[in-house]
Length: 274
Length: 319
Image (tube, rainbow over all chains, first blue to last red; front, side):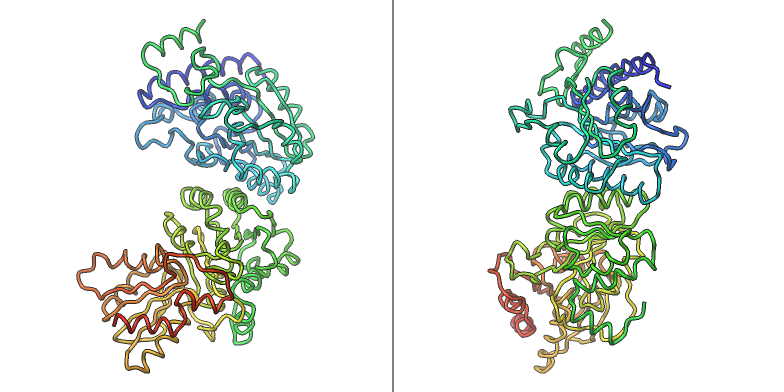
């Protein structure tokens, strides 16, 4: 049952967790910008949308979630920890040498990390294959969710996958594009223009939705609408701010990977608690 | 499935690429989880019969090799056993990252059937030649790399792969009227080389189409009093180390492949024998580090120095 306050609380905790994890990661830093932009969407997904059996993440009736923008793993781990899928030990091992929970997702079927990602442009093909497989198994209860970045749409393989999803009539595939308008080197508009990205997806045969990616109520309503009587692959554009929640990180391309020293950490926490 | 003189003859006429289409018809009997994905290569792979008989087990993803391997990984994750196919060069070089991540790193047991490897469709130019596919695929952890000698062995390798769970690249070389090395059914085991002929002076380890040429080269050499052993190394990875060790005891060890001299069978053998205390010299025969102009298959084989006569000549030169 959807409970806005519960999801808001989760998002708030997760944003704080991301700051703590980045501080703990020390001078190597973390992919903080693109993690902060997906906090609300992931919170809604894991709290209210994804059908998951937390005591058995291999349950075949589960929804599959694939983080194609693998550099957002820190946010995914933090959410999965807060909702009780990952343990305290799992999250404590983040970015430690030899850890299974590092910068990019490492496939861990029992823990619900569906695939190893990090090389951009792979997740949607994996999603298409998974969605085809569900159809082969006559599994009509599960859906496949894939989350990509808008910068990731530069990858040609995305468009191969986009074309095939509508060709195969995948009405069990849901794509979320985290449209934070930034990629590693700067604003997408300045690096590689993606004019009318929504129109491109629409012309590839996808049903296109849009939402404020930081408004949990709006996100929930958009997913609810998109998932009912789904007839074709669906893409939800989540309009977000890279680095959301911390003023000196927001919309700064050079915070794609960032380090929080004592001073900046303190400042970030003050802002989150204000 | 029993191989007999009749179907062996048919496969040879069809070529290794279309032999795949014939053998695929056996797959549903072996394992209902097997599905085939083609990247707009249904007809070159002779898969029309499979497509029509088992439409539910077949997908055509269009000319999109990255997506081909990515979709296969999604299907494999959910318990299916995908065979994917495209021309050898496009199914390896074009989607190398997908192979590395999905088949290597995540160890999904996808089978890539690389059609018309080496010079087979060299009439279309270097874009369609596949000289680096062994080098690429064998560099990836977890991968099995198969390179059958003829169409009989193509059938054997495909049937073995259908029962094997490992990620595998199956390199199909040669063209129509593919010379026959194996005239009747025989035992094929992944990772176990086959000694086709014993000999004491020279040991040739060959793979793919070059097995037949090496047998012919051996005949030429024997006429000149040189005793030659010929081994069919149908599995490049995992390499049959025992077979290599035995060959390294002859006066001259020769590897022959329709592949670049860099990174292929020759390199795999050289890596293996590097630390042996006692070993023969090793002549690596393959396609030298350059591009050749387009041409008909037999013309190209001569252009790169891989005809039986040229192989024999090159061996005599260093003997």
